[in-house]
Image 1 (cartoon, rainbow, N blue to C red):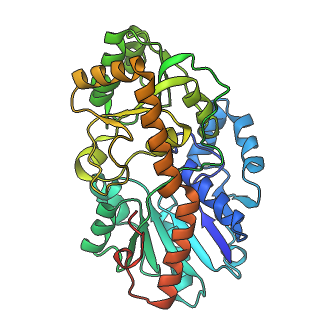
Image 2: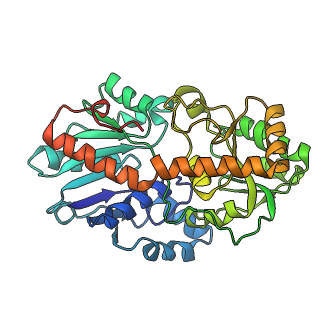
Image 3: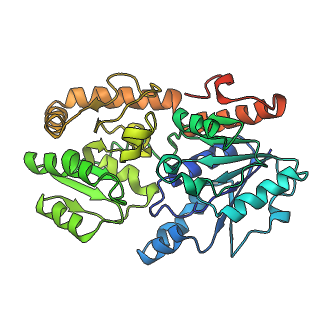
Length: 375
């Protein structure tokens, strides 16, 4: 089949945590011998910021890492006549411009012979619903939501009549253990500071425990304000700046433990949706301690990571994993086995094919009617 994917950013992962999953699914669809074409704007904010941040070389590395995926940048607007010609399945990610989302839907509604899906991987449904309300999804066959709670929101608010739970997963072709690297750091954390959505949590669960234990730690990410950088430096933590996603496995291998700090909307309003870092670290075999987060969909079984509910518990959990290497290794091995069994990009690519087949066979299907659709 011919897959046509419209993303705001595929080549760049600057402030774009979705890049890992979008790339990995594209890889797996191509490996399953489907034609995969990705359209992205050549002047998107993620790509322009990556270049300003000195990441031009990392952008040029992407095509070779994803053989079989045709990346087609466009200026101003894509040629939809050419892009949609003979397409079987079209995915439109929610960071695209509303005009493009609407026009692709219009073409589906006026005779397009492809299955059209809108893909939502953000918390705007609860934090900025007015932004999602700008999207005209009338012509879409369904919505792919990266958590069951988000799927329910689309249906309850009438934004879609058909929605499917489609969690992110790990691109295990890239994210895997690198045993030849000897860890140089006690802890690594990869994530963007953002818009104060977890600034208090980062201080409580990352900066303060690391400082109290005197750990050798490093942080990677972007959009860190000067006051945050001062706090990080005062805690004795190194700041590595932007880390391109495809280089994250080396960073995980170079540390003995990592932590999971979800943004406030995922911790409070959208339970069951982990950050992509959970999948990444587990696939890389790095032990995880998580700040408060409710795994209501039971994605990860017990003893695949440690859960804490306070800064004191975080400090104790980190000390435990760093002092008991056998425990840390056993937990990391169980977590990686869970990802390989249930949460790879190959699993998600196969699920996408299942969803498309259900739409074509039963127009009123929803994710609860699909085997494994919420896993």
